[in-house]
Amino acid sequence: MSRVIVPLDVSSKQAAMALVDRLGGQADFYKVGFELYTRSGPDVVRELVERGKQVFLDIKLHDIPNTVGRAVAVASELGVDLLTVHVSGGPSMMEAAAKARGGDLKLLGVTVLTSLSPDEMSTVWDREIRSVREEVGRLAVLASDTGMNGVVASALEASWLRRHLGEDFLIVTPGIRPAGSDAGDQSRIATPADAVAAGADYLVIGRPITQATDPAAALAAVLREIDQASLAS
Ligand code: C5P
Image: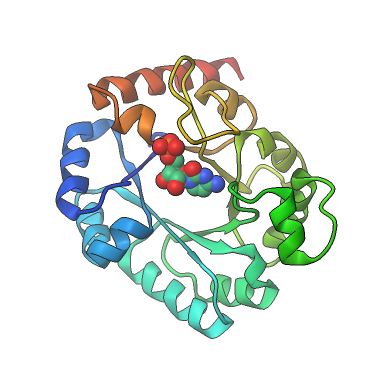
């Protein structure tokens, strides 16, 4: 199984499956986010599972414990492998999620959205935010203590998380850009090799693969870079 998760950031099941067909056997893990899930619902997840693919359902649950627990149970039944839950939903919510988890489902805590600035965080939490890294670390520890299997984090935070939360804690990193590719709207970026060296288990890599003229060739190049980095580390 490869460490690359390709996000299906498209608006229809048809477009999603066309990309899956294009990438073929090289890609075995796909992320389904809000847009596609709102459009195609569990059908797209079922089809991916039927094709033998692993699924990261990135719908960032945040609600009362009972409601989140029920949604987690349904995701488990669907055959989802990774599912996101907001750490700011609180310990009871994460414990309810962990209790409801079944099958092979692993839960990932979302600590601080990368789009949030320290100023915005101060506005929401009504206190001074000295360092985003510190907040990410604090929330990741809480996630670990309340039954989450890992977190979504930028590669820049991965080595701290790996050191403090141990080898079994899953670290999934978006914001990956192979050297020379366009950063787009991502600001805290790392190369695939850097992310692997920092301890990431899975790399979510979208546009550098999906917007390439030849997505399969772009993915093959990323996989080669990861293999070389894994051998070196
Ligand atoms: O195209 P790109 O490689 O930037 O796609 C990254 C994917 O990871 C997108 O689906 C995006 O929504 C998601 N993501 C992210 N940053 C986070 C969490 C998720 O870029 N902090």
